[in-house]
Image (cartoon, rainbow, N blue to C red; front, side, top):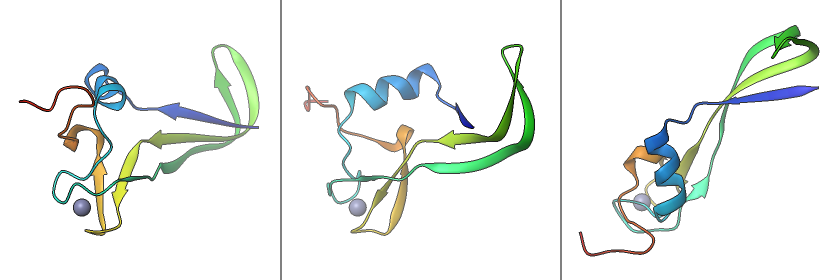
Length: 85
Ligand SMILES: [Zn+2]
């Protein structure tokens, strides 16, 4: 069994929901690119229960093919519904 731990601050969650996934530099559509780091392998404890497997730390990232650049959530610049700011 594998489990994933997310690192998402409230501000980033808002950006995930309300911001367009486009490149802040070239306006190209971004591709989701999740960054997975292995935290623990073997037995691990999650909410009082022990599991066997791999535990990952997952970071939500986007990638612009045009600029060959990784874009983090806090770098998104354009809102989905209002563009006048
Ligand atoms: Zn770009």
